Image 1 (tube, rainbow, N blue to C red):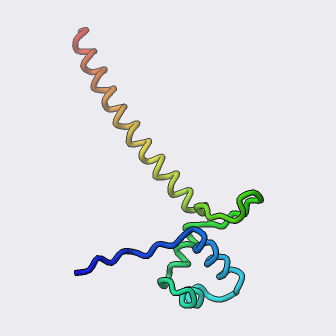
Image 2: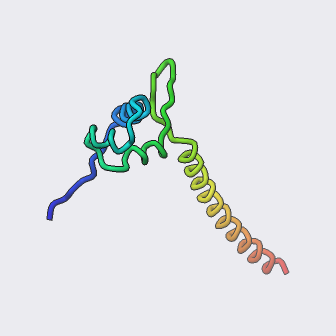
Image 3: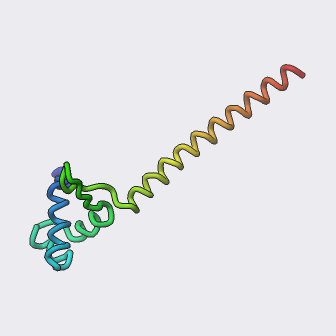
Length: 102
């Protein structure tokens, strides 16, 4: 049994592939075949990233608005869970101290 690792692509490659797809007018499937990447990969990258052009740093990939919103939702869910746990602990502490003073 062989260990097949996933092929990883650099940010520069992703940026250039997305830019090529946009500028060439070719379909994602055609560009994927030409670049030799897995079918559907460009569409995943397009959903996950957006190309941002900065005068100092040049073009770079950043999370798309949808991906940024998903990350924020995950962060808020973690924070809510932590706060709920803290609240339950405080309820127990109040209950313990209120029994002792009565």
